[in-house]
Length: 83
Image (cartoon, rainbow, N blue to C red; front, side):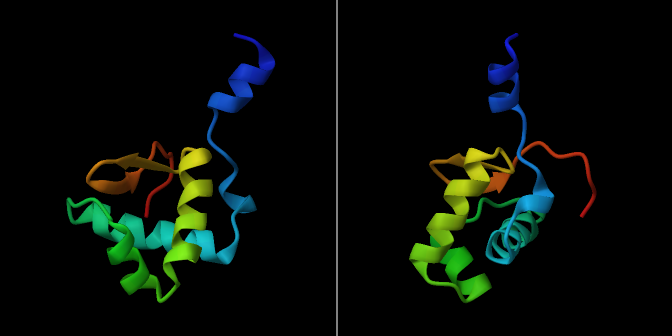
């Protein structure tokens, strides 16, 4: 596997996330732990952020593979740390 492809398939560094992204991630984690997928509405309600802000955070979190997106909503991506 080439170096650039390997890097693009790896998960982003969680320490590089901003506070808003961490807050959205934590909200998804709580909902995911209950066995549900998080919707945009769930996340705006849980975080107090605007829909635009939540969508922006989700774009980065999904892009860096911290979260997975499906038709039903958002769930945790692969990770190697406990909540």
